[in-house]
Image 1 (cartoon, protein in one colour):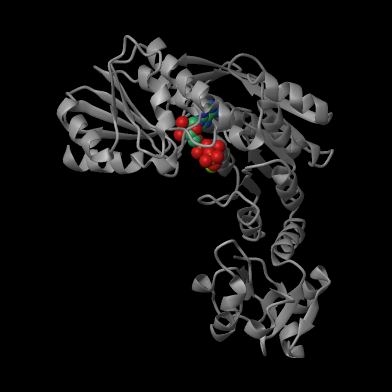
Image 2 (cartoon, rainbow, N blue to C red; image 1 turned 180 degrees about the vertical axis):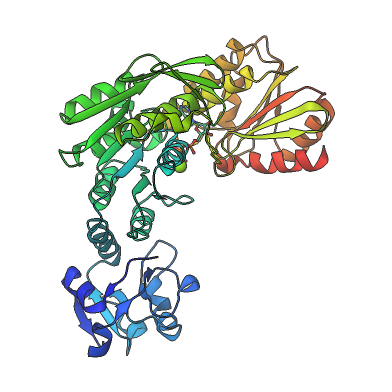
Length: 453
Ligand code: ATP
Ligand code: MG
């Protein structure tokens, strides 16, 4: 946490009331704002957030004991806060967001917001890697992509940064609008509109509208960078955005790429190695190239390739003994990413291609149909085996097998027998894809399989 200001200046920005703060503290500069006493360093401010399972106000006294100059707190909870130096606000989360927006506005740098149904983190990492060839980049860490994570990230901005790349996630309408107001991006990237969270939003139209809140709430001088190959996205964006737009795609667009080999992208006559495997990552990389072009990165510097490492469970490749390769996609799954990952498996040269899949969550009434679509893809790619983990809480995973006739399928109700089976079944030269929603726990299956192999 890097935002530094005079305490008194912060009080003015928030138009807040102060209680028990000595004058000399108001004239002191704080060294950051933290919401977690475990990371608190003396000289920082502590902001007490209230969640479903926790209340930061309960830690206010501890924060002051650990050296917090003051506590930003809601006016209630008098007993927990008695005698503490307080900046009182109506809603601490709103205050956190307001401070982040103010801080962000102190920097005249490109701020690139990335949203979409899938590929946000990957695209964010690729954009950050491209921009790092030209300057210093602040980017979203871990999963800090929501109403708390976006302000947290923005508060890390320092005068050393030349760019900020901010991931924005949503689970309902109105959330991307809120995050856009906080980050005030100059460039808005939407990777695609798919079916992730359709159980919460009801329809693909509603999802498209929710993603396009990024454009509707972006300043008119901003630039929209959109996936040309996603027609619903392009149509919905046109309804809310009349400003500058740059599209990218493998099928068309202002920045159009051609996959001349699985790992080589040809764009405007130049060839680029793609930092991550799979057609979907070629598309994600095109978004990064488009941003590079927009912000004046010399594409020449990218021709030798970029080193991009994703957080665990996304496009991770493990090479085991006997030429067995695992593609670990256990971080998450929706129908679009399942299809993309299955294609990536099929394109990985090897002897047999085996998919180990589990349920995709939060798909509501369309769940059965979407799981069947995954099975159809397995069938269409003519894989050599399909294994499904169907535990009691994910009976919907069973629907993947519906309609799979030519690919041998086996289902397992528990991860232990699945691991045992795989250890016996896998042969030299095999390629295995593991993918499901995170809560299915396939990451543990991968771990046990690797340990036992
Ligand atoms: P989350 O909503 O969990 O933050 P995300 O949008 O950040 O997800 P990533 O973590 O980048 O997405 O990727 C998740 C998975 O989606 C990847 O492991 C990959 O299988 C798939 N994926 C990534 N990019 C695309 C794409 N452009 N099209 C389809 N699938 C993709
Ligand atoms: Mg993400």
